[in-house]
Structures are given as structure tokens and as C-alpha cells.
Amino acid sequence: MLVRYRTTGNQTLANFQTDLNAIITGGVTSTSSLTTPAQANSSIYGTYPSGIYTRVNSTTYTYSKAHNVVSGYTHYFRFGFSATQLTTLDLAQSYTAGTDTLINTYQKTGLNINPTVNYDPNYPVGMDIVVSNKGIFIQAIQSAQMIGIFDLGHSGVTRAYTSSMLMAHQDMQNVINYGTNTGVIIPYTYNFDTLSYGTAGAGIATTSHVNITPLKKFTATSNLAVFENPVYITNTPSGSTIQLMYSVYKIPTATFAGIQIYQDSSNLYRLSVNDYAILVN
Amino acid sequence: MDKNFLTQVFGETEGYVYEYTGDVPEGIDPESIEMCTHVTLEFLKKHGNNLLATRVVQFPFQNHRIAIYSKSEEPVIGDGSGEFMLLASLTPDPVIEPVVEAPVESNTESNTESNTESNTESNTESNTESNTESNTESNTDSSTPTQG
Image (cartoon, rainbow over all chains, first blue to last red; front, side, top):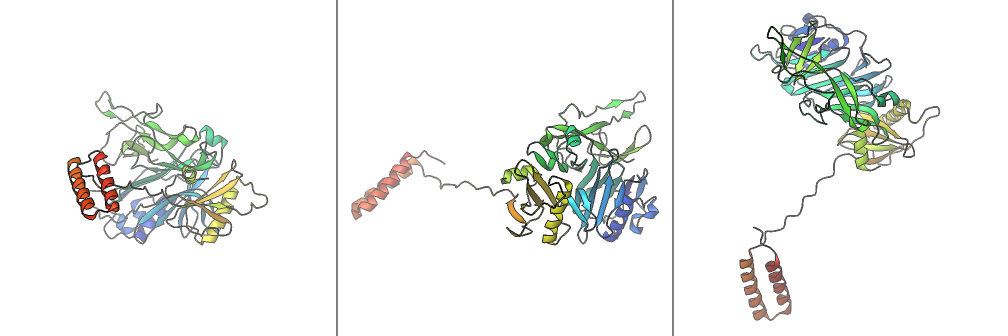
């Protein structure tokens, strides 16, 4: 599900917290389910993935997310707020309910996402929030943030060292910095350089033969064919093993300008960001 | 476990790493997630804030030492605080700027000045000390390549 979240200038942080929680937990089925300042100009695409997300604490904004394929791998994320902004996003391997404690947590700080953006039809930006069974993604162009948590596939390392997480934090602002540091952080995974578990900064390496940017080709009716190649991350500390990053596809360079939606041949929606496509369903 | 190694383990350039020196509870595998949970809860109990972002790593090839990382600008608990011993700050060490030497005067000027000064001083004061200083200066100046 994609919510293109557009508000009037009187939106409050409390309203945004309510809306964000409802979007993640399946409480938003139409724009009328959003708080009043977000109803008029927002829009919704796709369907909510049931059985994946659960809010695990009624005070903090802490959620569990089950892996879309691999059973037994549920990880946790938490939003942190200041008085006016969304400031942090934590991704953790496990969680202790009694004390509301995240275990083995990577915290992305300095988000400073301001939920209040007065909608302007001539410049219709706002937040885009994707919640699918493969990941969650928030882009807030007004605050220069594009953050996501996406499922990962197994590698030989993660199959053997089973405490390794199968989700990663992905900063989509960094994906244009092709190379080893493209914003992928796995909070807890086995590291063969240190012979211990640890945190891996991995990358989407376009130089690898497994990550080729597709070319622009045109159909017989002169329409652009948007090829979507799967994305693999390279985890160098784990012996340069690769893992599939679910929910994210590489699309031809400069297919879309800015942040846009499109449909695939099955009429399923995508959100395009920096020459990548994020699955909506 | 030095700072570079711990930076490699935790992938952070800020925050602090502590070593857990407490007991391993009976029935818990020291390399398990249950142990991570135990150490995290003990650490946060001591700190008093369950919202702190931490990670626990066991080092089976280093006598099963256990370290916990906390993301914070200042140490959250003091060194030697019970079961936790501060190992390192992951903030990079400040880069020491090279000492910039004063520009050396040109050979011609320095030779002229130093010769004049040394002659004047030594002749007027007839002082051994002034002779030594002036000779040293003039020799140094004349032997140093011109730099700007």
C-alpha cells in the first residue's frame, strides 16, 4: 500500500503519529480514515499487507515486522519523535515486551521529518509512505529523507549463523552513490573479518554482474518498456556474500523525473526513487 | 580489542563500547540472543533508559568476552561501573594538524641581515653569547632552501 500523504498547513505531530500508526497497522483503507488535515489532498494505492505488522507497545511507536518469505524471522522497528518532528528510526533484531526494550538496535538519527507541509497544487510534494509485506519506506522530500526497512534474502552466511538479521535499513538518498557505501545497514549479522556478529554496512554495487542497470528499450508501439532488475546487496564483511533486497528494483536511468508512481504490466503500482522502483503491493 | 577493531565490529563512528564483566546466567548460552537480551537489560537497568540504542556482541575467539555498544554523545555509565567497563569511545581521534613553520626569509636578505647583525653585535658587545647566536642563525638561514 502506498499513501501519498499530503496535508494542509495545520497538520500536527499528534495527527501525523495517529496517521502513521494507522497506515502501518492497517487502519487506513481510504483517505477518510486519515486525520482531517490529511484527507483532502492525500491518495492511496494498492492494498494493505495483513499479518505482517503489529504494534508491540501502546506508548512508544514500536512495531514488529515478519519476514515476507522466511518464517521465524521477525524483527522490530521504532519511530522516535521530538516535540514537532519524526527524528529517529530504529531497526532491531529482537524485542523484550516487558520492558519495551529493543535488542541489537541500529538507530538512524537526525531524520527531522516535519509532518506539516501545506499542500500546493503547483508543487504537490509531501510524504510518501509505502507499507508492503516486503518492507516499509518513507520519503519526505521536504525534509530530505528517503528511508526504508526492507527484507533480505538468505546468504550462505546467514543460513549458518542464524542470529543474522534478514532485514536492513536502507537510506535511498545514498543509492545514487554507487559503490560500497550505498546506505545499507544490517544491524546484526555475522562478520568473518572479526569472527563475531556485528553491524554490516553493505552496498548495492552496480559494478557487480548481479546488479546491472537495465537499458531503455521501446515497444512496437513506441512506449518505453520499464525493465525492473532485482537488487542484491553485497556484504563485504561476510565474505562478499550477496543477498536479495526484497521490494526494491533497479530501473533504467532517468526513466522518471522526481518521485513518481507507475504501474507494471499487471497493473501493480511502484514508487520510483532515484532510478529505483519500490514495490507498493 | 582496540578502537579500530570495535569500530569494525559495530560500524559506528560515534558512541561508546563497554565490556560486560558480569556472570552468565545459568542455562543461557553465552553466544545466544538470550545472552544479548540479558546484557542489554542489565545495561539499560543501570542507565535507566530503555530507549537507548544498543548492540551486544560476543567474541568467542577472545575468551568469550562480551561487549555492548551504546549510541550516545557522552558515556552513559561511568568507567568501572559494576558489571560494565568502558572499553572505548568510537569517535575518531582528532586529526593533529602539522605545525606550520614561519616562512624563511630569502637567502640574500637573511645573509645580509644576519651578517650585519652578527658583525655589529659581536663587534659592539664583544660577547661570546651573541656571537654564538648570530652565527647559528646565519648558518641556518643560509643553508635552508628558499621557501616563499
